Length: 515
Image (cartoon, rainbow, N blue to C red; front, side):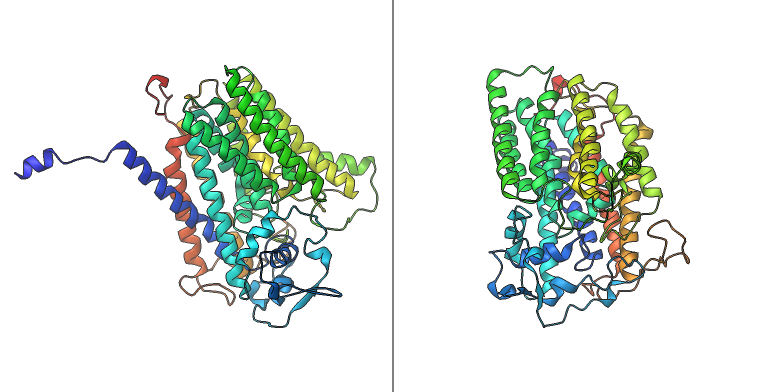
């Protein structure tokens, strides 16, 4: 009897296994990014006084949270001052912040997006979570952004055919880097721009190329949502969407697409471009002219121009570890930018072997934008790298630049990397994630000695002991060290669970490819 039961024991279907894998992938993504959420104190994102103030003064926030006066707007003290004791001072921990002060603080209208500098959609949505307990509110906002990012990424890759699934996954995973992981778990509107622009091109091309009608029209709707998400966050994201529409059209050269597909694809391009133009006309914040910073430049000539030419790619590729986190005061260990830069170069070389001409041309156009956009900002500010223009301004374009190299003519085809290259990809991303998370934790719980964050003359090595909780640590359930370990393990699980979908060991047979 037992032998009979064992013989006829039902096995899990491939579909149920895939659903379980995707569910586990989703949970692990939330855990990994939540580790960044917890490790960064209130006010740690660049210009958080402006962005948090704008959220608390949004129409969806309680009127008691933002009271208009003759001199500005009264806001909870923690919204305005949480970061002031540790900004631009890596050796200062977040233990110095005071989140319990009840006395409201006045901010000028220019510091709460009342002049239309940003589009406002990001602030409007986050305003629903603004409450009297600023710390709880901030962590809730961060988690919502993480949730949106995880859903958007998995949904985009789910509707994409295999070739675009690989291109999108490699582009996003390789491009995020420490700055991306930090921003996705922040209250900075750049997080939505990274999600929207970074995934939009995958949805657009998936609509044009997917043979499955359900997924094709799912990609159409997702493209609209991603376009709106990006434009609701930053004005320059609209300009990037228009540029990516052009690049996507070029990337489609060589593909056999019937007229009805071209018409609907063109319709999606027109719709997102119209939204982008509307936002560009409404918001005064465009391109690198963004965060309200004042120019530090005193003149601009040929010397400044040449210096910027030689150094501008530290901004363009700053998310790989070249750009400091937080208030631009937490530089990454040099092993991170070195490892991720080698990874990106090797990916481009590997992808270039069989990339379509149109996709190669589109990738090179994005590379030109990665050069010109920060250069234009530096010129307008009359300053030099790294002042005023931040890497996060152009970061949304980086996933497209890397991903375009992996677009193949057959929608069921994926680039097959060597075993060594696959393992290098997984290890480089995993170790960079883990080291960057640890470094971010050390910066706010132990502090970094002067010089360490900027690769200057240092007074000594930082303390790597993060086993005990700091005074500002948001929970007593686990220590900073436990948060780092769990976050790192979750990131490793994400990579291992996702690898079969975008790092195949062999070429997919189109005749047996899944729908």
